[in-house]
Length: 107
Image (cartoon, rainbow, N blue to C red; front, side):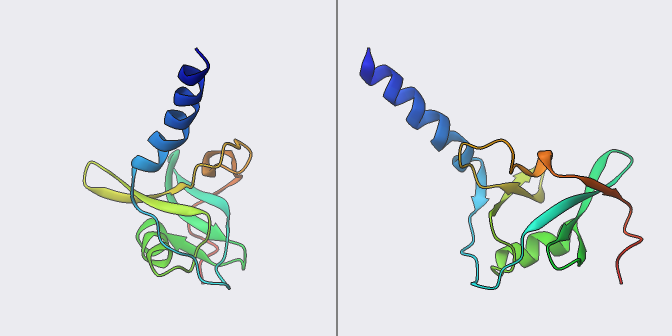
């Protein structure tokens, strides 16, 4: 039975990683996402640790370039978006971050 529990643990950590289509390597000076930008309840962008706000597409591109750490790229219905890298913690998931509305702070 112990092997079964170990297998479940391994599966629970592997499955979220399999949902990611790209896991970019972060640059040493990569920023963190500190808040989600939402419009009508849907994520439309990301606020970074340096205060910069990127729309979803810019965020995905920045992550692919290694400019955002702790995230991977996932695809749903043909659209790419960012997802936290699974590490077993809930408190640092993107869905746990504070939200800001609209891209009014972009500039």
